[in-house]
Image (tube, rainbow over all chains, first blue to last red; front, side):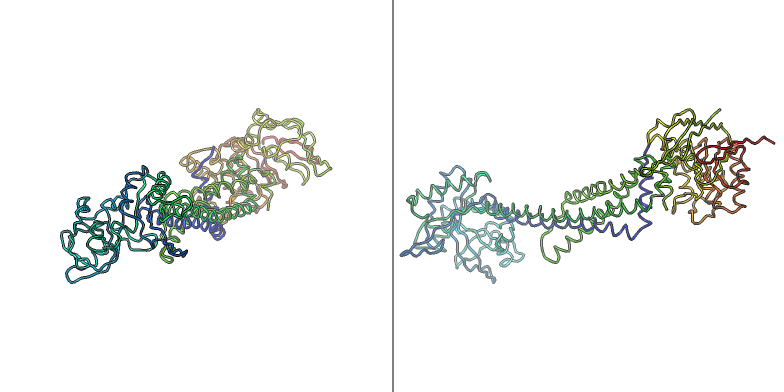
Length: 409
Length: 230
């Protein structure tokens, strides 16, 4: 018959007797558990940051850029030749089954004025579908419509940074601003998105109907040309098929033969980001694994001390056996002692790990996220370490011969 | 009514290739309620015999019946159970757990018998009271005199209501006055509680408290005298 509360009390007392030794043994577990929690927090934080960037970019996003000019054998950079048109965008929307929506972009930088304030920002001429393609919500007001695109209305949606710089506390919806001296009505304000993966402020922008951009702001010698076409695939699985369909369609539309270079580039941004996310996850696992090694070393420390303790307390074991302690009474006593060491170490380690990751995020400025799962994992693992490394010393103690043990000096 | 019965018990130790015979055919019957002193020079086999009686060791050959139970057939944990319930041990060096209060030392046998915390405390208090240590329950062994420590050990031996007490030179570390006090306590336990007491001693005046004296020499019993009641 085994009495757990009493056994725990006995272990506690035994550990208190050698305070310094117990504390040092625990230190191994404290560092191990702390390291596991802190490393997982750093890794999870990094993953979360990338995941946030993906969702701020717009999920399942594909970008089509114009190709490079080749002039006399000299190939210029990507985007030097305007080859994409509004008609391309329409064709992609209609003919690529894996595509959910399309938004062409005709953009430029312009000075914007409201009252006494002025601000230089990126003007993006596009379709209302831009909000869908980039998963962009409206903070206030309403979006412009397809009708506005058809009739090239002078309306605009403002990014949060523009609002902050031009309006301050005033509600911008319904106000007039001037872009390149052309008056526009503000119909709505875009929800804040924060920084992009490249560190750009995504909120420092104004969206206007693409036709308005062509006719009133960035009139070019190539009517109907756009700078970029943004495409949203129907799902993550549709990303690759959509890429392929767009490539084929544009080759056909641009009359590009099998041996010719494409005059456009299709970039699957989501895939790039997802690859980054995957590698961050692998990194997290790796960090966690390395940290676990220190937990293992802590466990060996426990085993070492427990072996010493069994030898030192041979006589005590003999007395207990003479009085009627059975094999498992003795075993449990030492296993629980090891478990107590590792669990107290575990709790201290959790505190150490949490404050450690706070410190990392303050000092290094990294995002760290402590998941309850990682705490549970580290704590459970430390308990297992205690039982595993406590077992052998306990087993050894239980096999002692009571007569020999009683005689031990 | 025999509480302890041994039949032709032998014990042979192997030290490498050499066989050492510690006991050669000891047959003995001890009745319930007897007070026996076991004497003999060191190496006479009395310690080995006591270890076997205490179920700490098994005989190489022969039979040992404790309350009609054949000890030779029992497993390690079953022997521990017998030691827990049937036998109270008292040692020369007291063998209390250090850094553990008197009452917790006394509670120890009940801990291995699955007795509830409340009952343990109650019975341990009663046992300490019966050996005259009321008010000392929270003292640690190093805060108690030798005589007091031995009383704690006696309380520990009594607490599970064991019918037999095995005492191995219980007064060996005590001065003569304290020794006498302890022996009076043994006599009281024997006469009032009818506990069977078997005690090993070198000293004749200690053996004088008993009512039967068994002398060992070279692994055999050489004399077994019962005192006539005066």
